[in-house]
Image (cartoon, rainbow over all chains, first blue to last red; front, side, top):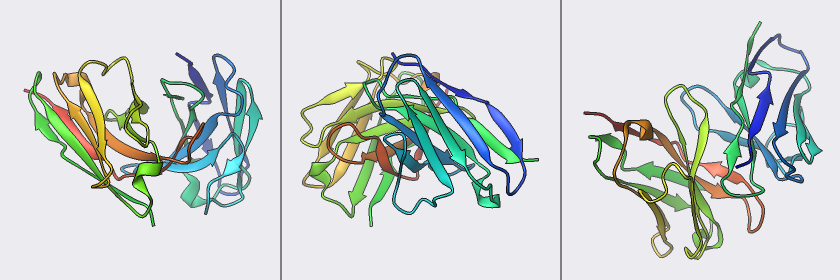
Amino acid sequence: DIQMTQSPSSLSASVGDRVTITCRASQGISNNLAWFQQKPGKAPKSLIYAASNLESGVPSKFSGSGSGTDFTLTISSLQPEDFATYYCQQYSTYPWTFGQGTTVDIK
Amino acid sequence: EVQLLESGGGLVQPGGSLRLSCAASGFTFSTYAMSWVRQAPGKGLEWVSSISGSGVGTYYADSVKGRFTISRDNSKYTLLLQMNSLRAEDTATYYCAKKRNVGYYPPDHWGQGTLVTVSS
């Protein structure tokens, strides 16, 4: 199975900060990488697919990059509604696997 | 508008069975592969199973293989998950998710989830 490792596991940031989360795959997955946002008690929300493509309706402050084994999610200017847990996921091969999550909270 | 509505969760004893349903609307159901993803309380996301649009192709996590069966009724726009021989570690919120497109794509829409609790 492909292991997905996110870092950091959690971070504290202020409104307006630029935030970067990294995700590393244990083997190459091309660009078959998605990012999801989840708020407490809610279902995940799809943000990015194919490493860098924004889902419809997702604001442009979110961006993704990477290919192969190393990927990043960047939030350009953190807003109150962005405080949540973020997960990466590889869909290159079954079993699909997720990173352990990165919780972004208020400093 | 795509909508996914799970049902069928509840409290079940270890060794018992439960069947989850996901009612889909707002898209041509038979075109898209569907998946179940679960989340144990306070834990991360775990993929459980996926099924192709036709229902011919099915895939399972090792943790549920041989105990869970995914299926779909395209005429009723419904995704199913039959869960047998349930264990305490199956306790989780189960989400159904629609695959974004044919080919190598992740989910793009998620249901609100249904909670399954396995306990005596």
